[in-house]
Amino acid sequence: MAEPETRPHTDGTTGTRTFQIQSGGYRAEVVSTGAGLRLLERTVDDKPMSLTESWPAGQNPPLSAGLILAPWPNRIRDGFFYFDGIEHQLEITEPARNNASHGLVRRRSWRLEEHERHRVKQSIDVGLAKGWPYPMRLSVTHELSGDGLAVTHTATNTGSVPAPYGLGIHTFVRVGDVPLDDCTLELAAGVRQPLDPERMLPDGPCVPVWDTEYDFSKPRSLKGVWLDTPYSSIMADADGVARHTLCAPDGKATTLWADRSFRWIQVFTADPDHGQGYPGRGRALAIEPMTCPPNSFNTGIDQIVLEPGETWSAMWGITSSV
Image 1 (cartoon, one colour):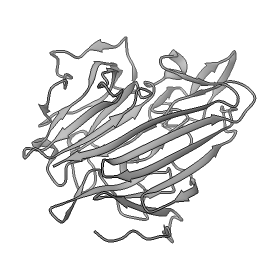
Image 2: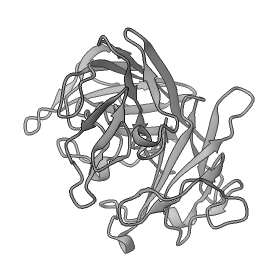
Image 3: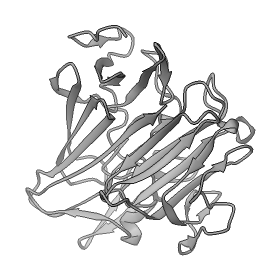
């Protein structure tokens, strides 16, 4: 495996910087736009094995792959929410469904704070925006070790009043070049949130997944499966971490883990038959750790409230077994 560059690459077209890190047989590339994870791979039998979907340097990630979604993930109905006695009207960023989608930072350039051989830290200030009067500072650290990738997020309320907050990461996982239909999926989740298929917003209360088509509590084939589903009742292991695993027929596997702060995961299959295949790959799988479900700023479900000066933090990561 080649040594990483000690300085970032800058794409002359988009101005996006790319930071390479490596450790313990893993290598990653993190970009400044959206603080996105552009690439994660592990060396197996002297060859790189991809653990995430990637995209060409200098281009925008398809389907927002790898990007950070904050200060809210997913969708807010009509861009409207009511918080602390005040009505807010956000910019509509998903006109076809009339929603405010995926927060305020996935298209912005993050600021480099630290870059070492095995880790990179970036930050961004969320200032005032249409319908968003809550200044805050966000940071993210991507760090590699022999255990894989660990990602640490913080959010600090830099304003003078309480502020709502939510976080999601649009992470696509894979096991090398194994087709998705040949893999199995196991999710540590007990319920799902039904969605209105027209607007992809909550449609009724959560329902158990046991013995239904949404049940992946045991490894199950993904052949022909299509999902765009928020899951909750996340079941953590004894160490306080929940693990969700994509496994190939030969036993190689990619596992996305998340701490208890992530009480939701959105599972999405990019599928050409549904008009959203991943370029160059066709079917692909996103396992997106999220702190709250769609429209949580209106329902209040798992909404985080940051007091002035308060800092919140959470961790997730990706590892592989071979």
